[in-house]
Amino acid sequence: MQTRTVTPADLARSVIAVPPMARDRDLKFHRGENEKIVRHIEAGGVDILLYGGNANFYHIAPSEYEAVLAGLAEIAGPETLVIPAVGPAYGVMMDQAAAIRRSAYPTAMVLPHQGITTSAGVVEGLRRFADAIERPIVLYIKYDDYIDVEGAKELVDAGLVSWIKYAVVRDDPGDDPYLSQLVEAVDPTIIVSGIGEQPVIEHLVDFKVNGFTAGCVCVRPDLSDRLLKAVQGGDLELARRIQAIFRPLEDLRNGINPIRVLHEAVRLAGIAETGPALPLLSGVTPEQETAILAAVEALKVAGV
Image (cartoon, rainbow, N blue to C red; front, top):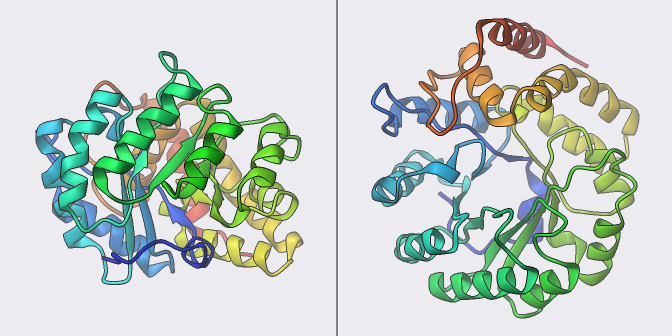
């Protein structure tokens, strides 16, 4: 596992895969099946793994947290960067801080809490967490009212942010006043598009952010990597063709639930047995599984 400080060059070199977490029938971390997922992603040319929402770190048990961190570190390749998530509740993230501090992980992403927060409170909480783990954090901006641009800049200027995952969904990703302000306030090379393959062209070309995270990359890492390289190389026609290939599975994720659909998609693709969904989530219906399988089969054989 890569343990050196994360740089903008790291963020630009690889798609950041956000994989599901495989669990056995007793809902325990399944080392063997998770290793299959990691090997598949690495074989496709992707070597940054972010374990957050798709791995349902929102509901991970504090009692298993440190063991899961150890398991992920052990199965990652020597040059693979792995980033775990914490939170989203303040008390949970501060209890998890001790495990992160004892580990070799170069950073950790704070899951965004929605509702019982203020921007000033988020700035203070994330500052305390970064101080507790003694390393910079990944700031995950998923909601407009989670943290304002001034608060994000305050954390960046204090040296507390490794990079920013920006994932606020817009009807038109090219029309985003918040992101426009953010890329003016902080260096856009530390900002990553966080909503999968579909808004990549607007975010990387129009707003000059430095890479992207994705879930569907876990099924076709080679194709997602080609998308990143196409956009970076200015071949937007190729990029749009690749986006169209990913769209059916992404539409199912958006229409049903992103975490639940990806969990089943990785299984249906024959990559690994992901096991049951970790409560408080559940699986999909038979009808939904049929639709996911069709999208996965098409994605597996698609070329450009």
